[in-house]
Each structure stands twice: as C-alpha cells, then as structure tokens.
Amino acid sequence: MKSLLLGLIAALAFAPNAYAANIVYSESSQGDFSGNNLNPTKLNLSQGSNIIIGSTTGNPNLDQDFFSITIPSGYAIKKIILAGYKGLDDDLINQGFLAVQSGSLIENGTVTANNPQLLGAATIGAEPGKQVGDNILDDLAKADSIRGFSFVGFPSGVLTQGNYTFWIQETRNGIEEYQLDFVLSQTPEPSTMLGLGMVMGIGMLLNRKRLLHYK
Image (cartoon, rainbow, N blue to C red; front, side, top):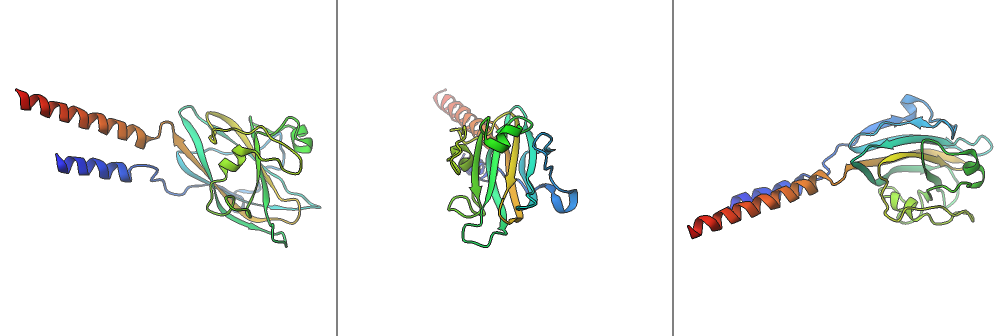
C-alpha cells in the first residue's frame, strides 16, 4: 500500500502542464501580423504553450498588430506569459500597449476612441508584474485605466470559450521584438481530473481493505 501511495503522489507531481514551448506564429518567417483591426490574423492554438513573436514600428509609420484566437469548449486561457520583450523607446519607461476585445475583430470606434470599450488593456514590458516572465493576463483582466480610457475588465482573470482579438503597438519608436505565450488549458485541467480519480481509487482500496479485515 505504501508503494502504491508513493507512486500516486509522484504521478500527481509530474502530470500537470508538462507542455513544450510551441511557436504558432513568428513574423520573421510567416509575415507581418495584420494591421487591419477589422480583419486580424487568425491564429490556431493547441493545448499548452502557444508562442507568438512579432515586432512593431512607432510613429510616423505606426505599425499596429491585430490577431484573433478561438478558445474551444472545455478549454480556457489562464495565463499569457510575456516570454520576451525588447522595446525601442529611448527612455526608462520603454513599454508597449496590449489590448484584448471579445469577438473576431475590433471595431474602428474602439481603436480611435475606445467606443465600444475594450475588454481589457495594459502596458507591458517595464512595470513590476508586467515584465518578461510575468503573467500579463491578470493585468488585462484588471483593466486599469490608461491615459484616461477605462475598460470593461474580467474579474475571473481567465478567458473562456469564445473568440478574442488582440492588439499590440507602441506609438513612440516601436517594439524590436515581443514574445507572448498563450497557455491553453483544459477545464478542469487533466491533473485535477487525475487527482480526483486517484483519490477515489485510494478510497475504494481502503474501503475494500476494511471490508476484508472485518470478514
């Protein structure tokens, strides 16, 4: 029984989220992301890590990147990791703008005047909690106001089934390279289901042992 329990504990420890990094789109090899908010580049995500790599230029030739994703039933995005960021601004702030909207596009009025409001937005790359290695989905979810504009927000901090469009830019000098890792997970996650199954299995074994003891 002891060896069985140790084996189950080991399985639980190593089962969750053992996904290898997966580059789903890189501008250097697949071309620029769409600059049209009404026709964003469509990305196909798979379970686990989904890395996109891009760059932008600032004014006067502002390059805006728009891309959309679909989260299928039974899945969710609980993390967007800023896997890499190198801005071109020559100041201490040196941060970019990232936004998300529900749906398969972002309306013109939203891009020009935030009407209708974006679901969430954040500046990335410089401030604590928004630097390389950080999960920036929770910052999009909090939807703190930026330059007087406010956003809808999503208190759960999770993107569930549906279509979403993302927008990234930096108006000053641009971004030499950004890397975003969209982590797509099953709901509930396989590790949770495995854990529940193992707990139930242990309970059945213990009950059987007790029954045999009293016979």
